[in-house]
Length: 448
Image 1 (cartoon, helix red, strand yellow):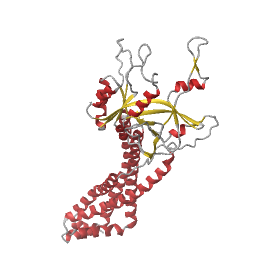
Image 2 (cartoon, one colour; image 1 turned 90 degrees about the horizontal axis):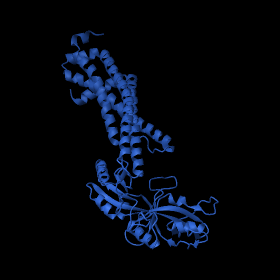
Image 3 (tube, helix red, strand yellow; image 1 turned 135 degrees about the vertical axis):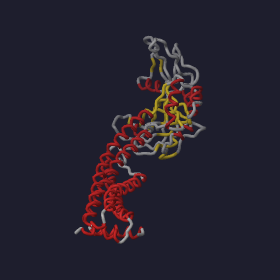
Image 4 (cartoon, one colour; image 1 turned 120 degrees about the vertical axis):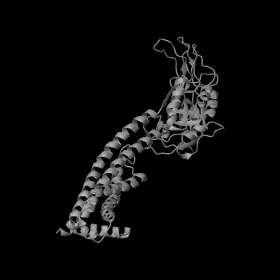
């Protein structure tokens, strides 16, 4: 018999008993929908967690810190390892390091009219800022060469407050409005408290000059509204060389705040950095690079440990959820096998006639396997439609939580679900199909 004839005969037999076929298909629908939705929850949680890690610095990013002087268990003092240009070059020579940038942080006060804000400016190389893939909502990143420009995080504007203390919300456009910046915060605080500095003896106070204000342009703003938060939302970025040049000018003949000092309290020569931004060319090499950095004597930190813990938890969650869904599909497989066995008992004489007419045993087997596979296919396709509906409802209800798209159905899961449901149907139909093959033609014809 041709495949077309076998399929036509199988579908006719299924449609002959519509209610029983419908109930069997319904079992597969519920089983398929259960396992797809359960797996989609695990995949959605994993995807959301990875997105959160990206917002908090990325998976292949390492932050390097200076190693301050400290005593070991044996009582010996470790050598102080500070971060300068030489250290950055040394870290950049480690295999698999793609980008390395010094990070210089300077505190400042931003003033515009009756509003002010305390900000922290981070100076980084243009290459590092591009590598961070900051989503620009307005303007552009700081220029690589030229005067100092600032790039605001989307939440920085909400850090401004009214100096009158009336709680008035700021109405500022950083790109268009004129904002002044004060870097000498010590002088600013002294001028706010009387404008004098103690000389160490009574009656020997010296007047303090008001700090200089600098007009700096805001070249761009990070994308996102007041409700959007990421690791960069409250940051203010600038080009490293431009920030260094400006700081040296602002603190000429004075100690730069945050810079290390010698034993006598005098600032050291040169500029030392607060940290290093290091980008690795692959997640699998992060731990290797971290080990090399530790061997240099620096401290380091990355999100790889958080990721590994999260992946382990997600595997456990997916196994539990997948197991729950698999139970439903197993019950559906039992339903298919029961339907096929009942079909054999009802069609015993028909099977006997086919054998007497010379029908090949493999054709009889194919008839029942096609019927079982058709039930699995119909149930799998309908179950997928139901899964998308349930997934949409779950995501709609979970909008208020910190997770976005908590249920995620990728294309590969769609194909796997259909293939698996058909495979379960055929697997459940094997035993009834072989039973039909072994029926004696004479016994089948005598059957009433």
